[in-house]
Length: 81
Image (cartoon, helix red, strand yellow):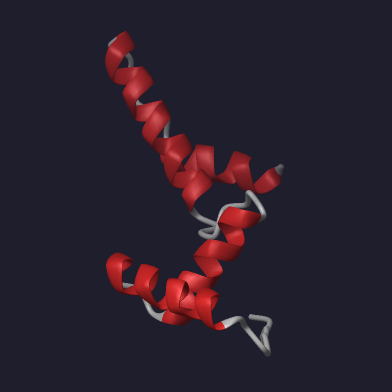
């Protein structure tokens, strides 16, 4: 995983980051990644999109009374994109 080092962070931003990390029970590094992903409007967790797709598929199939699509097939299709 790439390394990012940020110097001369303004004190008020650092304190805010520390406070948010404590509230979310994350390390400062994990909170910084979450804040960066949020600011870039990107997903910090690469597997989140897959989990969401599987959750939606399961919900849809239960509502329709259909069998659940094989998760392995869904994951393979997602990887092949």
